[in-house]
Length: 132
Image (cartoon, rainbow, N blue to C red; front, side):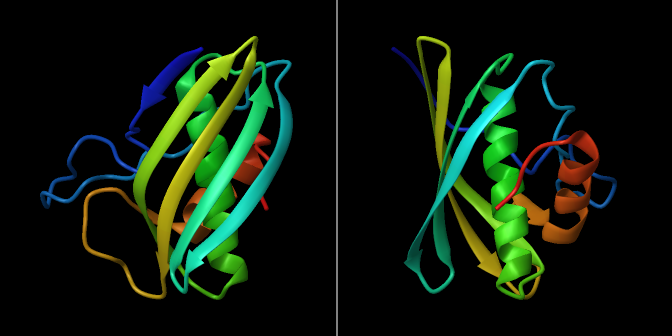
C-alpha cells in the first residue's frame, strides 16, 4: 500500500497581493470510476470527507474529488468557504482513497488553503467530478 500525506488542494502560486491563488480541480480522468463520498461531521464547522475512486492518474485526482465534496457540502450547509486542513491519500490495487478534513465557514477564513465553495463547485461540475 502506498500512502501519501498532505495536499496542496485549494492553493497554488501566490497571487499578486501575496495571498494564495486557488487551484481548481483538474479534468476528470478518462475512465475514472467514482466510488462514493462519506461525510463525517466532526464538529459544527469541521468535516471529514472520505472518498474512493478507481482510475485516478495520481493522488491529485482523488484530492480533487474530496475538494469537490467539501465545496458542495459547504454550499449545502449555507456556507461560502472552506479551508483545507489535511488530506491522507492511499492507493491499493488501483483503488484510491482520500480522507480529507476541512473547516467550513460563511466568511473567507484565514490561511493559504482556502476555497471559494461556489467557484470550486462550478469547476467540479464543469470537469465532471461528482459532489455530495
